[in-house]
Image 1 (spheres, helix red, strand yellow):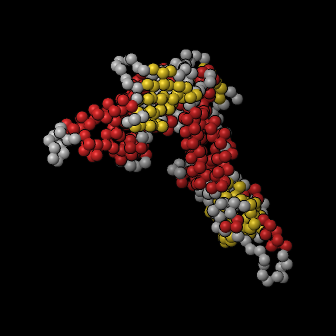
Image 2 (cartoon, one colour):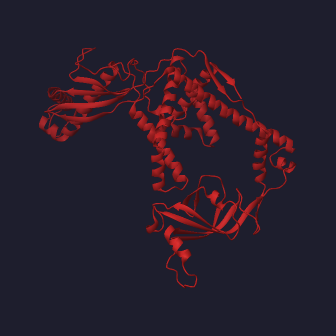
Image 3 (spheres, rainbow, N blue to C red):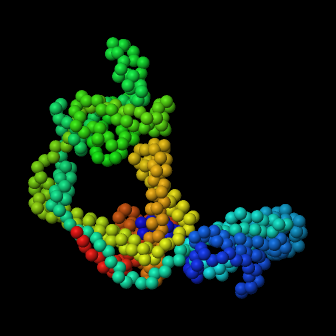
Length: 488
């Protein structure tokens, strides 16, 4: 599964599966199971795979338990001036009252939770936590807990699984492009002449000015004979290097610029290029923060990588005798990469087909919210790394909110399908397999095994490793049951 963090939220203890996840009616009972429990409880539906447990202890039970705690305490503590077991209750209450109350509260909550979750025929996703707790000697104890349940997924068989994929092919043109990229590494930058124009891949050196739009127009309209201009740029930065790339977003002079290559291509040294931008909310000049502006680039220099001829020297630089040998190696690596991509696509298609067969998989809204928030945080980090402002990040997350939620739901459906397949086929992961994965990880990052293992264990990430192995096993099992037809 792509998101092993979801597994961290899944409780490891096995419970009897609730065949009507999220659809049974609420119930109230006084418990006559193995032994009597002095509380009342009720479990009601809150939505798909989500229930609410409510527990009430009467005041007399609280008093009885407190009395029992003080009786036990009297025989355990020895207070100055009193024989052991003879300390007066008032003195004990003054010294230990708060601790006794806290002990009773947690003891009764723990007993009720353990009994309810052990007898309610529910398969929990997470260990529930008590909430809305009220507790006093006169009013008794009340609390509730939200129960998130595994969705009911019935997998009858894996017969007639069939998907279509495009065959893995590596064209000569693909190899040419890859070789050209390798050869480019040997290139040296040269400065272009005044009559040459900017192309993709060039590096442009420019003086940059940032203007409020209206002031730039007014400045351009000013009479050149005037000694002092009424208008000035918000920011000036000299000798800024810009890569002319098809990437959607670049950071120039601390400002995010969209599709910059579109504005620069075809220009020459001496040209002035104006680009519309939105200034970040933490921009240097307060007056411009969050506003639309114009970035003016005065092109000073254009640099282009001069690539040497592609020959056996390129091959020798990569430990091959001839360019033909290098070409074959590049082809094989491209083939491996495309094969991995196809394998991933096959797995995605298999999961999609399994979900289609299973039908609607109801998901706990709390879990969807949690997974959506995790994905938002991941996207936010990527946006920060790209240099986007807080305002731009907020807009990005708002615009992509539905997409992020759908992605989160798909990840969860995939997790539960593979989890159900693993249960049905008794697919498990041994401690030795986890250990082997940790050994490989420690070797890859060149750190000691005990150090890596301790870090993974303390952070809970061992569960991620265990699940990633189990996911791969479940996917490989499904792959063996699937007819893959190459088309096109």
